[in-house]
Image 1 (tube, rainbow, N blue to C red):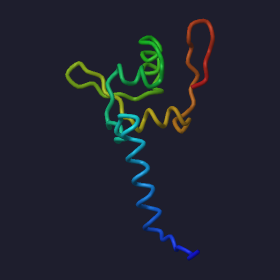
Image 2: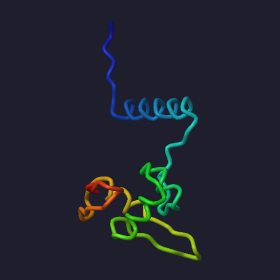
Image 3: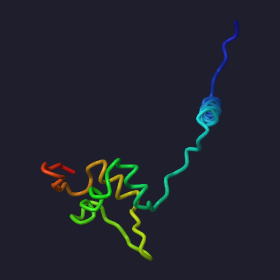
Image 4: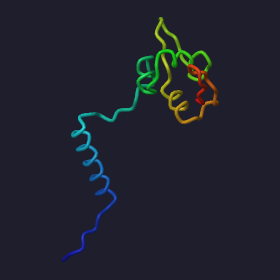
Length: 100
C-alpha cells in the first residue's frame, strides 16, 4: 500500500468543500452581519423588550444614532455590550437590578 501525502492546499480545499456543503444543508449563507442594526433587530438579537432597550439607551449602555426618526445601533457596539467590553452599568429592570 503506497503512502499518500496530504498538503495544506488539499486540507484547505477539503475545508472549503465541507463548508459549502454545510451551507447548502442549512440553506443559509454565512454573511457578515450588517454594520448598522435597527431597533427590532437589536431586540431580537438580545432577546429583550422595547422597555428594556429604551432603558439601555437612556442610561448609555447601548449607543445609538437617530436618522430621520429611525434608530440605528452599531453591530460592533452590540458585540461589545454582549462581551462585557463596554463599561459595566447597573440598570433597574422592574423591581430588581440587573448587571449589564
